[in-house]
Image (cartoon, rainbow, N blue to C red; front, side):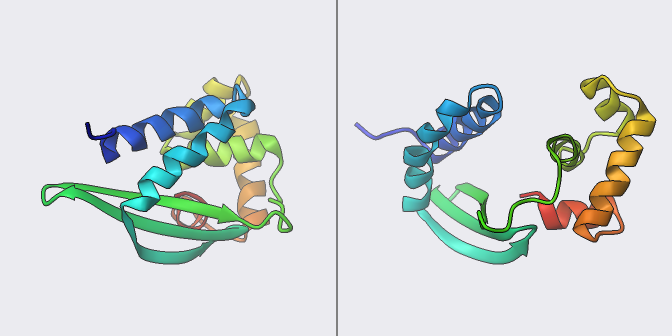
Length: 138
């Protein structure tokens, strides 16, 4: 009997990563899922990202079923210059959220979010949201 599809495995990995913020102990469960994805994948791009490298992979189960995913590998010695709050704001920007939405989600004022975005831009040496997403987000 065949195992889970690539799409199911990728979905399981996404759910696990989202839940890891609340339950960090579940991070260890990611390795077998990631190994299953990588087993069927080929590398299609490698590019630098903030504090590491991004590897873009493609896997095909059948001619019409293509799965593309990105893994970002960070160098532990090159710790992120962002504070936890700034990292959360950057993640929300990568999701495409507006400043007002981020402020509501975090329970802070929009001016606080604007200030954090300026700090993120300064620390990562980017000048726009597009540049931030290209540099930081998978």
